[in-house]
Image (cartoon, each protein chain N blue to C red):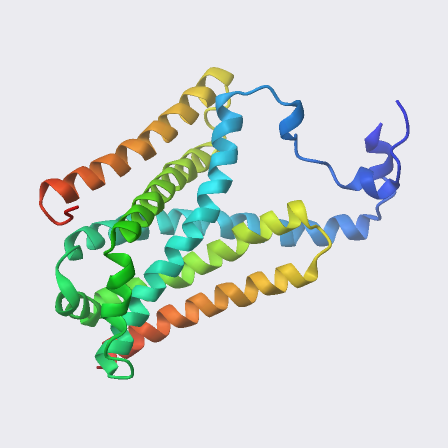
Length: 143
Length: 124
């Protein structure tokens, strides 16, 4: 084998990267776990803004804060963003569960790992759809 | 093979990363376990508060148990976020101290805004 270009490169093992990997479900859900994690940061910011809006309105520092928050959060665009955030959040939640199962040393057989990846992905999507179906069915959200 | 180059690292370096590495790994796991329950509680609460308006939201935050759980959720969420975003920084920009600092400041800022909001609502 040829020598690596620098010794420093040898100290830094690269993650297997996209160009050389054939698609498989565990690779896809791994990427999705990172993507949904980053997307969920936006959710944390939105909920922080909600709390701040309540606080600013209640304290009288900025009485219009809550109305301002709702003008975005309750708008069609806002609802679309909330939907995306719940999807990312639920997929990250079930994906996190999958990782915790693997962290306990369980489910490493390729067939089990694949099944776990599918179940966590479909479970996350199902939870999101159920959450919004109930929101619409109870009339809490109307378009 | 690559392994022979790894031996050039001093045993001292290996030892420092051992302890630090385990602590971070464990923190990632424990924050995950805590957030599993806290975010499900948050989703449940959000469902209850949806379309109920400002007064209901304020009344919700004013319940001491809710305020405490909200604060705990945010502390753990932003800690988890900091570790998660740092994993991204280290993968794509391994030498950037600036991005790691920016990440820390961002997470602390979001936490401060959320806790500030809870405090103001709770006190009002």
